[in-house]
Image (cartoon, rainbow, N blue to C red; front, side):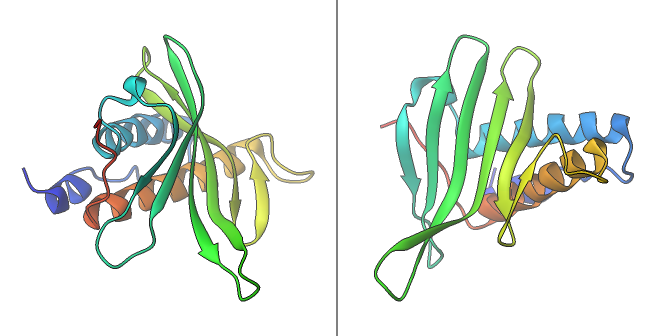
Length: 150
């Protein structure tokens, strides 16, 4: 199966409900497994360079038998020679439940945490983070990013 078809074969949930959010977690898990097959065999910081785009950095933050906590980010060069890490998502993968949940991240220059800010519903923040993860994973797969075990 071609990588481009992997990215387009999974449709998005249509509504912002709790049930749709759970479905989005499942879709994110499927896409994450395509991006990082054999996830439990990886550790440290991994890099996928595909085509002409920026290299994707994947940092395995914590791993145990049933869960993996990781970060997905780009390192954007600054004029002063340093790097900004954006977008930057923290994702918890539940291997036994077969779901992947973006729990925190930096999107569009501001921090988002699944607990939400004052006046913002937790469901709305989770939906925004995980919808972004879904779209980003599809984009990465379309661009042929993949973290393979060496």
